[in-house]
Image (cartoon, rainbow, N blue to C red):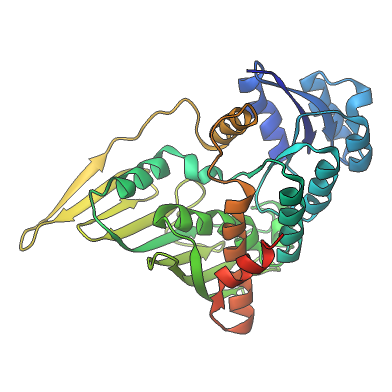
Length: 350
């Protein structure tokens, strides 16, 4: 397996997590040859950690792409920077691994998809929650057929971010804060578990009067999937009671012969009832994969670059999740049911 070279866009915050926790696990398969961040102190702290020479540290992204030769780039920047980063990568014909969401608007997502598809480049979008042991287990149960056909799915995320800045200051300032920074994960998970894409979505996002957010921090949406599965999404950044925070979201999948649940205790449970009998509950042991979450996706991305299997969350697939999120925003604003597949089909015409 040939060692790959990487241009890293971002050096602090979540990018700092990548640099300190993800990249060291793959030093035999990749090396960072360029680093970009507009904050010089963060840039140099992470640059020193990676052992990158000063000449390969950049505060200007255009300069970084112009002066760096790399096999791929990793984009860990605010969403409104993603479009520029992808377009620069396309010009240099670099493969792309990007944090979600694809971009900060559906128009930008469309532009990114068309540019990457026209160039024939590989691009994967991070949806790390698919690859936690709990969610891998729930999906395996559903795909095994043990519970028969899926009827509907309920997903819940609720955390206490009532204090300003408790979820990172910028999230308290941006519009559609819950959907853009959280719902993009949860709506993708509903797709992942259902086995279908979103056909229709309706519902609303809002901001309660006591919220510390400027943008919408609560959401309730109903989805109809292309395989006729229904789904319900509940999200709140103002939870003062029962919490289902990050990595501890609640999912319940109701099926033909029973149901499967996972809650904040991270226990996957199967509930089965024979006709006329009491309900039997079984706790399902979790796997212990070599990699999970972000590490799973970095591993599969590097393997893909070497000719391995195409990952599930490639750009063309993730356009479905991004469309669901942006359609939710439209559905709320227009008090309407939005045809998500109509959006996707129009956007993905190259």
